[in-house]
Image: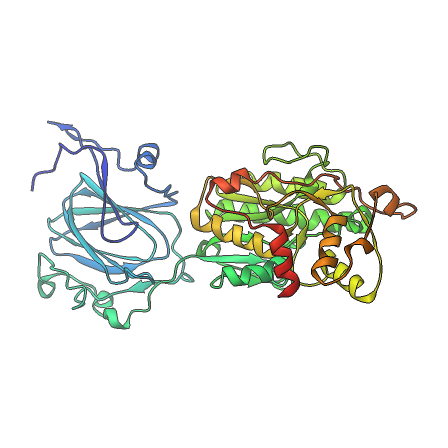
Length: 465
């Protein structure tokens, strides 16, 4: 077969999701030919993912009929032919609706194919002296999970040009299982840090297949103590862990702990995510601002007032260096366990009439709303960056929220009196400064198709659930 020299650079999709055939220009003359086998900028412009190759392998095959496969590996590979010609066969061995789907094609040096993680790859040489080349984006590891399918599987029913009984096949490949006995390869996982916190518990409902860790499993303050983990098996890390003791962070010990968890630990997460091409989702806070504007946009420069806010701002900046990241900035978080809303409900029930600050203004953010937004970002995959997330509605003060709690639980909201932040904390030492305006602009998260729920209705649901 004569090498095709008339192809233009283009891609063709296949019945297997993510398996993409690539036509490559191969200009030539009497001296031979030349091709750009992997040209990152051009291929990304055609819609291919950024492979990020770390290894280049070549398999030279002396005879026609050499047959190898079917091997599904836990990394992506970009397959091409340097010399000769192959018949390639690919079978989707991933868990999902296309499990068992088959695609075949003949390839010479003028074509390549992107084979995604979990798709079984195999080929048969059609000419002697065929050199088969492939780029991969992870190094081979004995700890990695592999999936195999028998070349003669009756369900896949691959029509090999050279009958398998006449082909050169290794004993190991001959022993691979039939499709009915193949355990499908699962997709890359999501790892959630802080799985026992209020946000971690909310995330369990929207990310049921994720792996959840606690501080005992993975302590952000002690990156050197993290147990070995095959990070390439993860597609996303959600950091729902943080040091959040705002006032304690103003003490010498608290300052050290806050920087250790919110900065040093986050820096290690950022390093891991960058090195392993993982999406890093990191939860931020309105405390990165000084609260001097009515509504905070994502691009507002950080201006933290206290140590907690300083550590969160530093962590945000570090996460921003990860190629694929989402900083989810929230305010006034309410979740499971002790919190302002539960405290006000308890005071109302016990007949206590509280004085509550009325010069701090913002919106509540229920942990379930943050979890819903994170799941949305991971599903939709908008542009990396920072996204404000809170419940929607008119900005209110903490005193307004307290009155709503009293009313919703059947008590007189007039029992709540307002006071200023300065008066409330007067005479108390070690109190961190609070931003007075914490309302977040929600336009950017809305533009991704996420519609924040109203805080008033969410508050009623929270109190009655």
